[in-house]
Length: 303
Image (cartoon, rainbow, N blue to C red):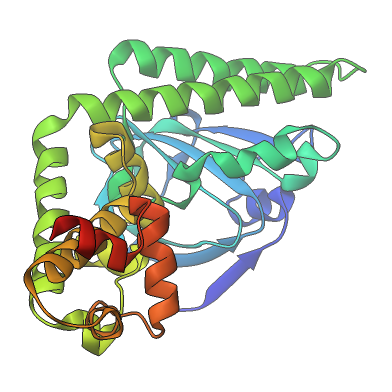
C-alpha cells in the first residue's frame, strides 16, 4: 500500500474531494455533511500538519502509533505532523458519519507563543488506543469550539481573525489537557491494571538478571512492554501516583542498590556492574544524588 505524503491542507481537501478552505492553514471537516462511498480501500498518509479528531460511528478503522482503534464511541485523538496514519474502510455500504476533524498547519502558529507551547501537549504523541473519551457535556463544549473556529474563518477575515482562531485553538488544547487528566483519575480500574503491569515488569526485569545483560531499562522499553506510548504512560503515572516512569525506574534502582549494600559484601564497583552501570563513578554519583549519601557512607551508616 502506497504511503502518501500530504504537505498542505489544500492538498488533503482535493484528495478527499472536499470544498476548498477560505483559510489555507486551518480547516474544520464536519462529517455529517460528507458522504463516504462504500469501499474496502485503505490509505496511508503522512501529514505535514496537525489533526484533532472527534469521531463517532465512523464505519472505518484508523491506525497510528502501534495500535488500532475502532471509533464506535465519541472520543478524540490528536495527531502531530510526521506521524503515519492508515485509514481502513470497514463498511462496504455508503454511510453517513458523525464527527469533526480540525486540521491546522504549524505555520498558523508562527509568531505566537503556541508555536512553542504546543509541544507541552503530549497527547499529540499518544497511540490510537489512548484516545480521549468525552462525556456528553464535554463533547458539546468541544464541538462548540470547532464551530467557533469554523465560523471565524468562514466570515470576513480581518486583523482580529487570526488572534481569535489561535485563542480558540488554545482553549481547545487546554480543555483536552483537563479532560485527559480527568480520564486518568476516573478510569481507575484499567489505569490501576496498567500500573500493576508496569510494577510487575520492573520487578521481573530487576530480578531476572536483565540489568547485567541489557542495562538499565529505558522509559521506551517499559512503555512498549505494557503496550502504550512513553508520554501517555508517564502522564498517567504522574496523575495516579505523582511519579513518572523515569522516577519509578530510579526508585527501583535505589531499592536494589540499598539491598545489595546492606546485605552483601560486594564492592561498590561490583554492585554498579550488577545494576547495569558501565562505570562505578556513574553509579556513585547517581546514588548520592538520590540518597544524599555515597554508597560507602550508606553501607557504613547501615552497619
